[in-house]
Amino acid sequence: MSDSIFRTVIKTKNNFKTISHTSSIVLFGSCFSENMGKKLAYYKFQQTTNPYGVLFHPLAIEKAIFDCLHLQHYDTSDLILHNERYHSFHHHSDFSKNTEAEIVTAINSTIASTNKKLKEASHLIITLGTAWIYKHVETDTVVANCHKIPQKEFSKELLTVDEITQSLQRIQNGISKINPDLKIIYTVSPVRHVKDGMIENSLSKSHLISAIHRLLKSNAVSYFPAYEIMMDDLRDYRFYAADMIHPNETAITYIWEQFVQAWIATPTELLKKIDNVQKSISHKPFNPDSEAHKKFKEHLKTQIWSLEAQLAISF
Image 1 (cartoon, rainbow, N blue to C red):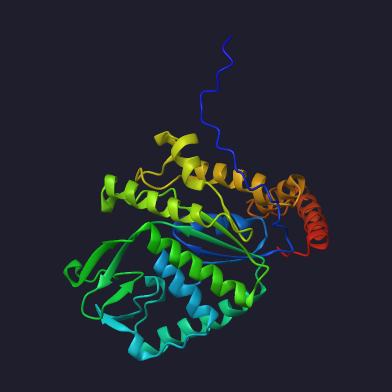
Image 2 (image 1 turned 90 degrees about the vertical axis):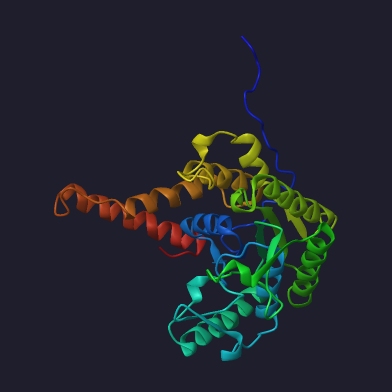
């Protein structure tokens, strides 16, 4: 019988296991950050995910982080009006509102709360999605989101490896001034930006990976290979969603499990107990008034109390 392994095993080099339920984690970046943020939230870790909404390129993430670090104040002059809604070029469309007052209030409130989170954070996870950027021609502004404004109003550029490296270095330098003990974990989104073109997507990802690896000499910076796990270990379309672009739940869970092995200090048994409690909470009984269900609820309460006392969490 052959001893061959018919898959590519991606080994994570930075097995620091420094994240526990006493850690405070902030995530910025692409929709893959949302996936990891949801997993962290599900397992009751302290996390703040994408306070500016989904951001794809390094300059957008840098802008968001520095806004929060320096308590940048937004007013109506920072907004644009398109399709009868107000938008910010530096925020996801989740922030878009019908009135100027609503969006300005939401943005400034988020900046204030994220400033506090960054000062207290133990870990910052940054997921880069693309090296392609769009610049609003009229205002000469690099945007995080085009908000479906006609493409002719923007120019498209590919950030060089040097430009990305410099952006990430500025983030690291800025963070270290207010929170020198914070650890930065970089990852590259496994989502392919096919609208840019397949060749252009590969070029973009290579620029991101090259830039990150220039920074890995610092003890404050690490790399988690989500992109490599998806491309090489899970190289099969059964691990993709229906759009054949985004990883499906099976793939997300698998990558999460690799992240747990590399970074999570909380014992696996406790994570399994949290998972069981979460599943029990969402369980819908056939007969809510039955004795069996009453016993089930009492047992669940005991499990919840035990975990909340042990890990200082709340369900």
